[in-house]
Image 1: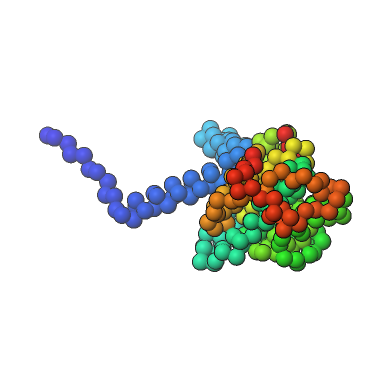
Image 2: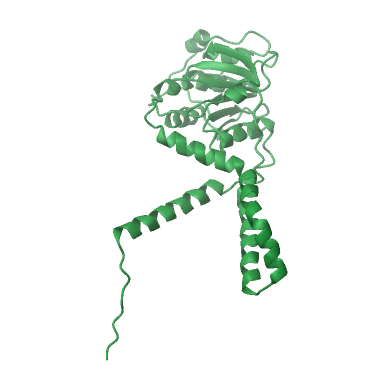
Length: 291
């Protein structure tokens, strides 16, 4: 007698169910990869295995202890992973609100790229944070409110080493500078390079907490970096910075004409105006260890 193999009935709902679970697991692993949550998850998995073997081996005392602590573990995980949970919910909310127009926020980077080029040439430290979907009001209130129209001249003035507002970050909302000398949260990610200083860790920290974009110029080397989603891209050229900002802010970037080497030292003198820099444009010029 030939035995027949009974294949389980697979419905469309079952396939969709498995795919959704796989997507959730993938998104969760992508969220915690490279963050401080990764080693914490190893500890949680270890506790789970201990609970399983305690029940399997009838270790009554250990089983009682873990069963007593288990209801509180859920609340402990919420406290420990509050930053990651907040970041995940913020990403979900920003994806749902894709209908909002990003064109006004995308127009801000031209003066930012121009100013970053100037700071890089003069090795002037700078940190510029561009707000996107998630508001930065908490961090704006920690600095000096400006609510001024974004311009190259204003950025050059704010980050002059002799200026009282050069320490801290400038926060940009749409086409306006909301505040300067703002305090930002420092990233506590243990996998970051020890060569990164406070300015770069603050840029990574704010992009871990929100969906903002941060432009950093090193005071020691003049290197330009870009932080987004808790990651940092270092040693960018001005052209690459323009392309990345245009991608992140969803705006087409035409081939730029960047200023040649600035002859004046704006640390000692007044910062060159956008008009004087524009007169020094060279259509064929191309600009190419952190503090």
